[in-house]
Length: 309
Ligand SMILES: [Zn+2]
Image 1 (cartoon, rainbow, N blue to C red):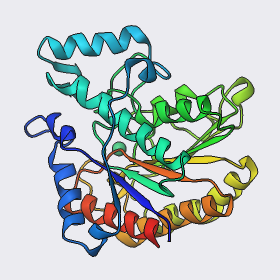
Image 2 (image 1 turned 60 degrees about the horizontal axis):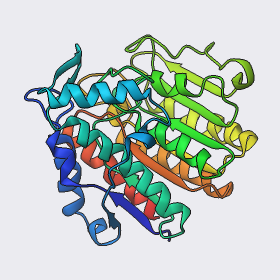
Image 3 (image 1 turned 90 degrees about the vertical axis):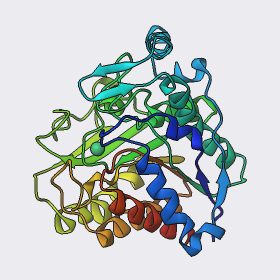
């Protein structure tokens, strides 16, 4: 059995907005499900650190980072029609990145075998100089750059959120050292993620999008993870795997139209872990979407169960 870290801190609750789907209730549900489960004594609780602006600048324009700080200091508001910031959001977002970096550090040091980062705000829509889709800083993209900086040669990002991770794709589109693999409802927000977006220059062939029509369920989604993903990962031979774990692929999610069940989520997670283990690549999950609070709590528990198995 592997040592599994669970990264969480109450600081993540300070980014909140009434009646917005991306609210603190999401993490409260995850923590409640974990607290009421026998898994609560099996995971190792890890506190995030505060990422430095220089670390965030591995993926973001320094002027954008400063702009977010000033926007929050001035009281916050909406950065785009979907994406709010409060006076606390800058600090919370630094800790969301820092949660992923702390997990990576502990895995590289051998203290943890795997980790799940219950962080927010989410990250995969955030571009180099633009907040969008509830995302401020791209937690997973900063993590991938950080891994490269720490000497990891090849990083594989798996994104099973129901939305395409336009920000993450953009960050590594011309990069052959970070592979981006995504399944998502398509056409749908944010509009990117067609199968012919495959990377450019040296990065051509290192982006793989599997767009799925509205209504696709376990029958369509699970085989992508049980058949295609292992082939692609084996070819790339990653040294580290980051997962953009968005649970809005669930059938009960109010914002999306995929129909993946709890059992489908279990099989997806199991396959990601199985092929990563075969390749001896450690895995760090970072929370992205998931807006049905019950389904989110249940699916994160399922993920932790599989990680502990
Ligand atoms: Zn999503």
